[in-house]
Image (cartoon, rainbow, N blue to C red; front, side):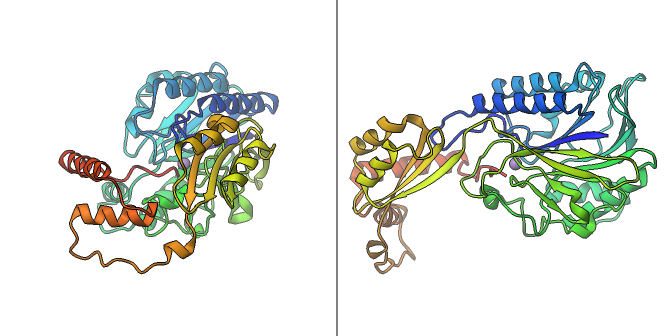
Length: 410
Ligand SMILES: [Mn+2]
């Protein structure tokens, strides 16, 4: 069976300056559809983070549905989707009756009972496992669809299955894995799809800022079920093959969303015959823009970089060494050369200026704290207007309970 594994589309994600990436996302999904058609792919697995936002834009949703319609090929090709930490698990499955009628399996959470039509090419085996056999498939696939879950939700799932409490994240997952394994079938292709962090996996960038990554919420490679022919993972944006001859796999994001991590983008094409080792090959993706980070010694060099052909057509983060903040006219001069491709201009102050002794901040009032912070960042005193603006916004944020950390990009 030929399987295409893709993940972490983050539809609707924007750059820090608000610049949309939806055109790139359209192009790269068209590229994935072309690959699926040209390579006679029989099953598509999408391992979570379909969307970037919990409440995605209509534009992002429409792009997802149009892509699903193409990929499913009128229900002849099977498509399996699980929710990632960025997806709203309920919202992702909201059009359930339509999905199943088209050979599309979408699983948002745990313990949900699906209303599958009798004629369905998808059958619920319980325990978040499904057997799928659509027209294009050479044999059936058993798919253990294990979406992202917080430690709390996972523990609750574990308790409801076993009647026992007190399991940690890794142990609860390990239990779900072994429950899945019981439903795997000889003669079928057995796939585990999940969205999680495997200990030892390599990051691409911003995933590091996530709270639901690393730390207690990591799974050792040894936890994965030996009976799975292939484990299709999402969450880490850097493509990588791990454990057991590389059959525990992160295919990564189809677009570059981070500055580090090398920016390699691909889908995995997986060839499996029941009972044989899966053969995984990388199909590179070429649509979408690259990202680059420049470090200029001063404003003149920054301008020179912008005028040159360096990284033409890429998204640029420009760091400029300065002694005092860049003037708006200087930023405008840089932007005139590269337009919105220059998605951020960051002034960098020399260490000599930064290295002054730190103020003792214990017992300072908000206003004084802000002033100290502003001085370390901007190297001059904030104006009264700026201080008042800060105090007003800070009071509003406090009153409305905002200021909680946004979800990370992982
Ligand atoms: Mn992600």
